[in-house]
Image (cartoon, rainbow, N blue to C red; front, side, top):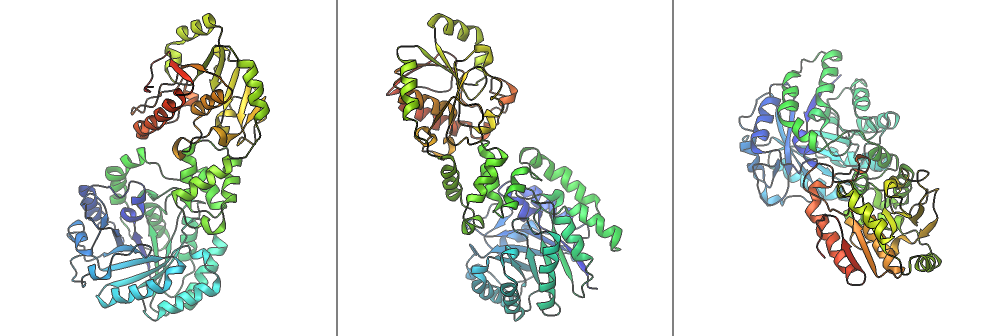
Length: 524
C-alpha cells in the first residue's frame, strides 16, 4: 500500500466564499498553524489575476506568494492552483528557487486538455512539480479519461486528481473512476481526490479510496471546517481524525480547531456554507452549483419549481455557469404566458372611480396601523395587499408573484387572489395575469410584487394609487417587514435595490399618480 497524504485547500477553494479576502494576518497565521498539524501539502491560494493584494489569497505570480508562506516548513509541500480557463502568462512564471511554491496544481475542463498539457510541460521545465486535475471527472467517458491519463503519463506529473466538481459522484461510480485512473496511471504518480459535498459524498468517497489499499500514493483534498462554495468540501479536521484512528497517522487536530475558531468562524456566521436543499437539487440535476446559489437568492421558487427550472437548463449550459445564463433560464421559466385581457377588463370595471390603496409588507404598516386603517375607512378604499395576508386590514384583493410567499397565503384569506402566470402550483386563485407583462426588465427586481401590482393597476386604467408600508430596504439587518414571517435579508444590497425600485416607481408615477402615506426610502 502506498502513502496517504492530506492536502489543505482552505485558502484556495474556501476563498470562493469570501472572494479570497481572508486578510494578510489570517493568511500568514493560517500557514503557520497548518504546519503544526502534520498535513503534508498546503495549497496557499490561486495563481491568477493581474494585481497583488496581500489581504487576498490570490497571487498574480509565484513570487507574490513567498511572504505569505514564510517561514516554510520543511515537513510540508507548498502549492498554488492555476485554472486553464484563465491561466497567467507563462512568461510571468520564474524558475523554482525554493522560496515560494514548490508545485502548481493545474485544473482544466476536457476541452482545454491540450493547452493544459503544454502548460504543465513548461511548469516542469521551470523546476516545479505538477498536479493534473481533471475538472468534472464524471463528465468524461471511460475512454476519454483513459486517453487523458495516458497523455499526461508522458509528463509523469507528481499527481493526477479526480475532481467531483458538482458534488454528485456517488460511491459506486467514484470507485469505478478511481479504478480506471489507478489502472491507467504510470507507476509513481499519486492519485488525488478533490470532493465537493453537495450530496454529502465527500467523506465516504475519500474513505473508500483510502480503503482500496492501492499500491500508489493517495492525496486527499480537504478544507478546515469544510469551508467551500455552496455545500463546502471534505472537512480536514474530520478526515484527519479518521486517518489517526484507522491508518496509524498522528495528525495534530488542535491547530485545525484553532484555525476554525480564530480565522473561519466569523466568516461562517455571515457567509454560510454547508448542506442545503438548493445545492442538493442542483447536484441531482447535474448542474453547476452556482445555479442553485443564484436561484436560492431569488427566494421565490418552491422546491417543485426550483427542480423544474433546473431540469429545463440545457445539458451544455448545466456544466458551465454564468449569471447571464441563469437570468435567461429564470426569466424563461417565470414567463409562462397567459392571456389576461379579460382579467384587465374586469378589474377596470370594478376599480373605475374608486380610491385604491396598496399595502406593502413594510414595518411602517404596523407602526402606522391606526392611520392606515382610518384612511381606508374614510376614503372607502379598495384595498390591495402585495404578497402578504394583511388580514388585519381586511383587503379586498391579494396580489402575489412569489409562490414561496403564496403558500402561506392561500387558504387563509377571504380576499380575492390575483396571481401571476408563473405560479403553476397555486390552488386558491380568482384571477391570473401574465407574469412577463408586469415583470421588471432588471433581473435583480424582476418579480418585485409591489412594482408588479402597481403596473397591473396602471394597465387596468387606474389613475391614482395610495401606498402604505412600502418602506424600502435598509442597511440594517434588523427586520424591515410587517411581521417576522415575511423577513428576508437584503441589507447587504439595500442601497442598490432601493435605487432600482425607485427608478421604476418614478416611471410608474409619470402615468399613474402615486402617494405614500407612511415613511419610505423612495422619492417620486
